[in-house]
Length: 634
Image (cartoon, rainbow, N blue to C red; front, side, top):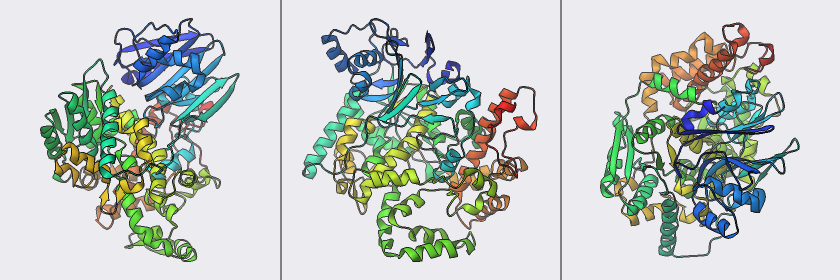
């Protein structure tokens, strides 16, 4: 299991076995380089822990624990967890400020505790093997390495991918493997599992009234502290700098503590090259700036990255995230990033679109249903306004959910998917239910705050933080995210929505903070891009022959997920410029590459020299079978 995740921890390996319990750990050494070997134990060796992440308040916690009689044998933040557990049990997680996923074994109580940090910065997967063993790990491949029977593909997980481009917690692409959701812990004792939530985003908007100057003062002080405590490190540290407002603010605050190493990537296509913006910020704050023009062999790059991913993943910004992480790792071991600002301060354009389309709330429900059920399917797929009319025909909540869906197989994209695939999914699965429940249960009164809560629970953990973790860990780089410090998040959440979003002024108060810190105006007043890529150009040029043709190969079409004619229509519409189908095509490519580079590679490694039909991972026409589900027959 450890060998599958060496990239996450190239510096050290630790293994401990106590009767029926075994812990393994690959370590990226950052604090207490010499003495932080894991697993780590308490004084009488009855409590053991393996831990991935950083606890930023561990020194304060340690001082308090030592006053209460606990004895430490390392200087690592990890040891704080076992002593806190001795005093507080599973509630020890409430004291931790940081990013973490850990497994803790209490030998006295014969109990296992798994925990994941509040926002989901660190991943944690678990599942039961055929022999009844509970397995957990930072990546799915660690579980599959000892329990290949868990590689039973979940049609509901695939459906979520087609809808959203990622698979939200707690699902994975595999029916018998789950993600422990952010802010949750799992207790396992006497053969029973109990999963419970220990933290949630607090209520939106109950903050006492304050002036703009007072708000800015507190915002600066609180974010400054979140940045400061993340500068703790025994190894070199830097920052990822896209040139946007979020990363620029983080760099501005880091620069107060000394010279910062910053890292940026750009592309030859000038429409997507943000290097000049990043240079302006680096020059303004006197950083040691490093940059890279990425001219990837995109086919080779995608082939490589999709081999690293155990689930289909459709966020194309994983490519520049990987390249900037790889460059940064040549100079530092830890970086800070500006992720999370859009979910906190309403920075995504979709919030603006949702606000503008509220004018369609008055459309009668019967009229909307008539269009969707009696008109939409008979209009040509390239008909101008066809999809827009579908969207505005929906009630407000469903309208937003439709706007974030890429390939909704049970709704407006049914014609793309085969009847076999739709039967495989079944009638009881509703891919929107979880999202609807988050929206309805949001601790907020206004629509914008409900959307922020929804995206924090789904898109942030399932897409943004997954991308950052996987691409950075592929290069053995640790990324810290000050904007997602849970103490800071709780304060920002309480701000009224008008501090975050005003028509024409997204991220209002945060942009005011950036101005106050001296961030160049060019970084404040430009369209949001982040580490964007020229995907629409690649689809019509570099990818046209190498990868788009892959979608029409018999090997792809015979899997049985899609209707071949519908796939050809999407490709033709895009290449002829009739419609921009970039997002849909990218998802189809990501899915097929995952099938080839992970599922088939995994299957073939188990089949050895046998290349029978059973070893070829596919979904057969006529009778749809879950890929890899027939393991017992191999």
